[in-house]
Each structure stands twice: as structure tokens, then as C-alpha cells.
Length: 226
Image 1: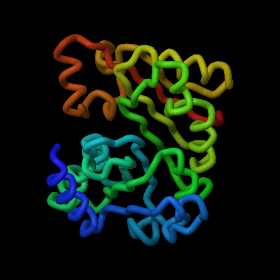
Image 2: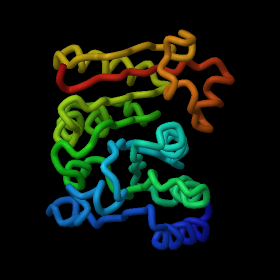
Image 3: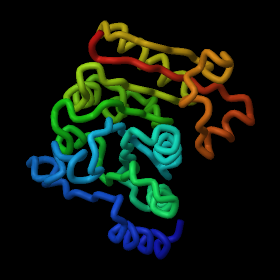
């Protein structure tokens, strides 16, 4: 994407009512006025809040919102020029249960109150295979602690990935932490009706390409308390 296109999208994001772009200081110093008030001040209802972390173009966020109109969805990514597409689509289609939050994921616990979020999706994250990159792996223990802080007690975590490495790493970590796993499979499209519908009925552009070349898609659903 050219720099002119990026700048145009950044400018458009500034005008979108469904996009929130806090400063780092707001996240670090608890200065975001929406923290603890996402339902009342942003979505203007009391429906469950669902986050998609690393949402990219926002395809999954938008399609989950269409599938579950009685839930509120927030796509989270630092790259605003990417989620511009999802934000624009949501506005064009009148989806008032969709929003986008531009921030680094390591700041997520500074932007939501404790127990404010009902579910978190992590879809096709960079597996960060090299050892020195493990601190950036979105299911490492540090990140899990941040998610636990903002999730409700029975809140759900979802991991959908094409990386067998990420799938195995996360399962091993969850077993080590003795966290309850509701569902796990290394080939979620290979099990037919047993697969949760929100996992197999929604595909990102890249996911459909992976499936065309026979790449397996993995999925884990877990909680922090039984």
C-alpha cells in the first residue's frame, strides 16, 4: 500500500464514529474515558463485549458482528490503515455493534476495566517462532495475564490459527497452567458439524487461500476458570 493511500485511510479513520485511537499515555495512565464505560458510552447498550486482537482488515470482527447482532465487537490492531476497510464496511452496512480500537495489544489491560470483556478472539497471529521473539507471542503467559484481568470470570478465549506451532505451544502452556480447555482441534475444518459454526462459517481472505492449498486450520477455546 502506498504512503498516500495510508495517509488517506488515517484521515478517514479520524472521521469514523466507530474508530477509537487512544494515545499511549491514555492507555498507560488509565486516562481513556471509555475504560469501564464501553457499553454505556460507545455501544450504548449492555450487550456482551467481544474483542478480536490483531484484527487486520477486520473481516472476522465484521462477520462475527453480523452473526451475533446481540453482542458488541471490537477489532483491535495497531495498523489503522488495515482495519480501515472493516470500519468503513461496518459503517456502510449500518452495523452499530462493531467498533475498532487502534492500539498495541500489550496495552490492552489499560483500556478496559476488570471484568469488562466477555470474549477474546485471536485470529491468525504471527507465531513468533524464533526464541528471542517469544515475548511478542500473543498467547504467552504475560499476555494471558492481561486478558484474564479484563475478562469476566467465565469469559471465553478463542485461538484460530494456521500455525501448528502456535497451536501446540498454546495447548502446552494451557495444560501447564491447568486452565480449562473447552475445545481443541488441529484440523477444525476436518471434523464437519462438530466444529463451532463461528469458526468454520467465517473465513478471512488469507484463510481461504490456506484452505485452497490444503493447509489445516487449528482452533482452541479455553477459559481462565472452570
